[in-house]
Length: 409
Image (cartoon, rainbow, N blue to C red; front, side, top):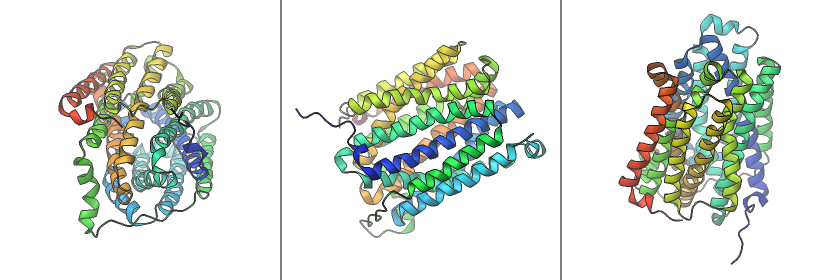
């Protein structure tokens, strides 16, 4: 039996450059978002204000993504990705200005200007996400999709570990101006690294479609594939109800008393878990029994979320968040492999857009749900409720989606 090369995708120069650019952009965005969340809670002490951060990005993203997927399949994906990187850098530069110094602009106008800019960044990401997801399969042979999905997840998760952790530490040791300037500089560097990725032609469409047919093709494709629909739906509802990241400023400030540095470490914890799991998955692919492994992983995610909610110890809270990230990465790798394997080249943008809508709904709208539930139920009960709902979703998927349950790849 020939041993598989766990680093096969990384040996391709174009894939490495693509992931390096993505790493730097993700690092910078995560760093900036950690500071934004802390500052808004520090200035408002309003849990719902944290939830509105996610909602202000998610709604524009969802509205834009369907057309963003259409654009990724019609126009050059590389040019779209380049322009969106610069757009994101401009948005975070403006937010840095609003929060700089004594946050005078924030005190005058409240969080509304930040919500508006975050909304604009959501529109930009609506074009960015389908383009990014459509590019990487063009850089590698089909037999490496699972390996590339693992390393792609590792890249994102590593950046998401370092971004919040260093963002909180840098902000705690310096100030908003320095931290945001560093984040924007990294975004600009990401743009120049991306220029090294060789441009590939956009695959021709397989048939002539009207604009409406093209815009809805991704939805029709996903909803006709039970395995694909089940995988992304499971992730949607699990993170929608079970995600506690939006409330971390509350836990850090009011329950664990650890300050912005502690918040950065807590935000980094699930991503650190993802990185550790990612290296394990690079050598031990979870796709052989994909359906079973996915259900087990989301169950673990729900249980760890409940454990985090009940914790009053920083070390235990860190450990539970670590486990949520580890289990979530199993889900990410399986879902991405299903998407890349089952999707034709000419539809990657539109199918990726549908997937990104599900992700945005789970993450950003989930952040709003977390903030609203915390305001209505209390912080700890709301997170326990979310973890229980995640377990209920797993049970429903097991019963209602037999193709997903039995899926092997």
